[in-house]
Amino acid sequence: MRAAIAVILAAVLPACADAQGSKGTGVNEPNTLTAEEKAAGWRLLFDGKTTNGWRAYNGTGMPDGWQVVDGALTRVAPAADIITTEKFRDFELSLEWKVQAGGNSGIFYRAVEGLDYIFQGAPEYQVLDDERHADGKSELTSAGSNYALHRAPRGVVRPAGQWNEARIVVKGNHVEHWLNGRKIVDYELGSDAWKQLVARSKFANWKQYGLAAEGHIGLQEHGDFVAFRNIKIRPV
Image (tube, rainbow, N blue to C red):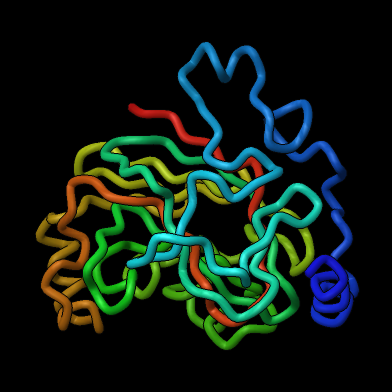
């Protein structure tokens, strides 16, 4: 499997050197917590070595297409969406992500199972190469957006192959999306404004969309290479 992964990575991401350095952001080393973070209540959702704590959406095991590569939880081959084994209600989530050129993925929160697809119930923080993917042409579906509902501004996401820092705050009905240290989305689940946006979107067809008070954190399989690291959460 390791040899196959190396071939895949060389083929799909030849230029994805870590332009942000090996230490990442916010911690001394990737997938560790500082003493200050521990004291503040942060904990890791990914240990950088195993896929413990994660499984397939609507499943029990971990799809083989997700592997730990160079300390990152990485989609390397056809797989399925994955979720945390735990559920969370109010939290602050922080992680780093990078995609291949033209790549697409997403981060779901308060995801519920039993639906055909995770996106039928869970809001999505868009993970994207804005420059090369068609979704990058619209701010509604660009990197960091609340997919298809709330716009993300231009000029915040880093190029494909570079690490981006995502932060998602969910407290009651209040939600914030942060990208590379900047708050880019701010909305209220269940508000009149939110209901109007949902009613005009594809999500109007799915009655459970955005209604769960707690749920899983999810990572999307969208057919492209994507890697995640420094995945940590703090209940609020």
